[in-house]
Length: 182
Image (cartoon, rainbow, N blue to C red; front, side):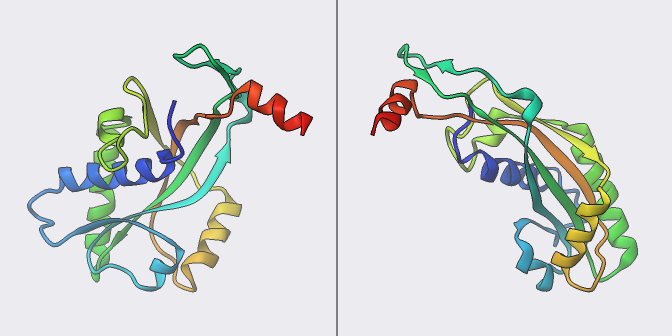
């Protein structure tokens, strides 16, 4: 099970994957996790990773678990993370090249291993854990929301979902019982 550092670790792992695969024809390209305000201050050339939605995976709620010490803890929180991968360049053709290249890299490595996920946030994921990246279509609601976030200028980009991110709990069943009695 992953810790609460997992969300940050997934975005950074996507950036690390792209940086490592950078071909020599993009020596100046930047790769970064961005936030909403960064759409107003775009990078010159590169690819951004923007977390635009976090969704609970209701159909996959796990039962309480027993930790290695034999203590019963609350169930993990299953999440699906939705990212917009956006190419940036002064030249439209280069944006298309960057986007196709990034999509190919992500298609070639659709599973992010715990080794990659734990590079920046050590211990965010347990050793056998992995996260699957899948290309997805943007819903109309998400496209409209992203348009509001990015300002008046439409940006070319593709959406990926990272699943299943399971945020573990450190709260035990006994802790919950004590809280209810208070």
